[in-house]
Image (cartoon, rainbow, N blue to C red; front, side, top):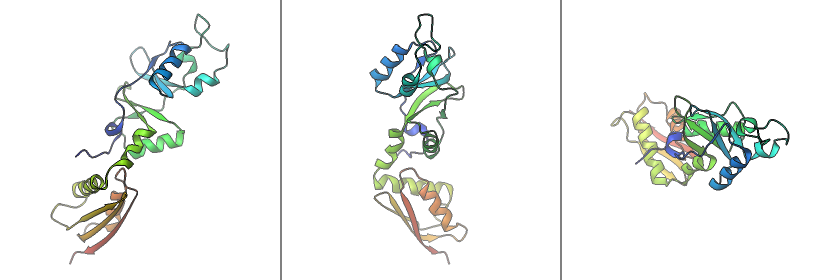
Length: 200
C-alpha cells in the first residue's frame, strides 16, 4: 500500500506551461483548453520563472508593456518570482503554502527549478477520501517505523471516519503525546486520541 506523505504522491505529473514570449491570446487558449486557472512560465532553459493566472490576464492594463505586435506576453503578465514546491515537500507544507498565498495550484519543481508536476487544492484534498483501513495502515506504519520498535508494544489502531483511536501497551520510553501527534500528522487523519496502558 502506498503511504501518501509528499507532494510527489498526489501531484498531477503532466505540466501545462507557456514560454516567456507567449502572447496573451495563446495563454488564454491554453488556460481554457486544459481547464486550469494558471500556468507556469518557463525560461529558455526550462526553469519556472513565473506564473500567469486568469487574474493576471484580467488585471493587465491594455497599452502597458507588449510585444512587437502590441500584444502583452507572459513575461509582462506573470507574477514573479514564482511560488513553487519541491516534489519532496510534505502535503501539509504545501497546503500551508497555498493557504498563506491564497493559491489554487503550485508548480512542483526539481533541484534545477524545472517543472515535474503541478499540485492543486483538489490534489491535496484527495488524502481525505482515503478509507479508514488505509489510514489505519498508514498510522501503524508511521508509528512502528519512526517511534515504536516492532514487538515493543501491543499497539492497536482503530479509525472511524478519519478519527484515530490508539490503544494497547506503550513502552515507558515512548511519550504518549508524541505518539498522538505523529498519528495526527498522517495526511487524511482528522483527529487522534489514545488510551494507552503503561508498560509494567
